[in-house]
Image (cartoon, rainbow, N blue to C red; front, side):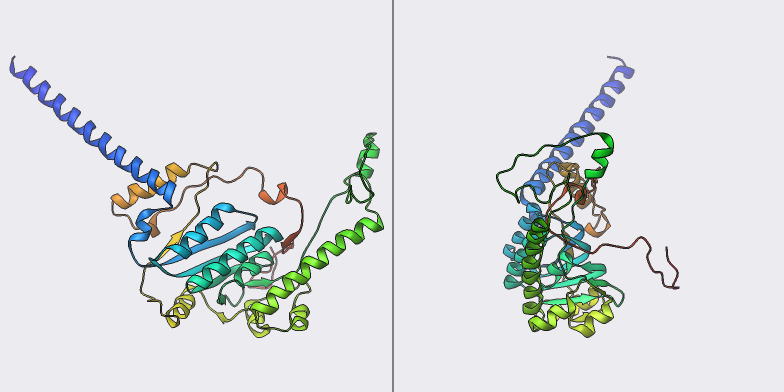
Length: 329
């Protein structure tokens, strides 16, 4: 072989070695990502920490989030939990499941809730599951109550010349109907359902906030409070942010200097959880701190609350919002 052939072969060997190394690294990342997806992140269990979980947006039944809360309760490395809430509420069933899971978590380790812009209705139901609630001075909170809404398209169908025939097993089986105004009996049935769920919600507030049922009922007419008003009413324990939550955890024997790690549920079928995990693994291998990594995600095309029916516990936001200068937007 002449000199040029020798040089070409050496360059070829270098390229092959490079791609072999790259393939090996990719395989390692893929395997670690698979572990991350299937176990919820083994590295998280490797160091003592304070866990942070976020509850935001519309609250609905969420098995993955409940599973995550159960993992936090069992993980010995997690010394305390901050539940970061920023939500106007959701379904009563979703709020109930979240409340029960957080109560079990609080029984296992110190748990504190922080409420940011808003923590109302079913989100407030989640907050009272914690042993301590921290709100901002301007946090919108409260809206304790239950809501049942349904549309009625009878007039519209008449104009379109569409008739709907129903055959039911009983007079209340089709109540409420989308095609006819609700009957007095149907409205009475729905009101009874709402009232029963409302009494249950008020009972939770009274129990968790050390209020009498009449005191809790007086606060549960659907009104919203600022954080300052909620503190005066006994609905929250303290004004502040995450620093205040860490200070409270320290009073419960948790080292406030422990790293605060954000835990998030995996979302099979929504977005690309394997890719999310691979990015997180790659970031850790490159020495990028978890706090600097923004999780990838895919939003639902149709808002979740538009696909739901049943009882809601959610604050109905107005079309205008107050600003600090008193104007609206």
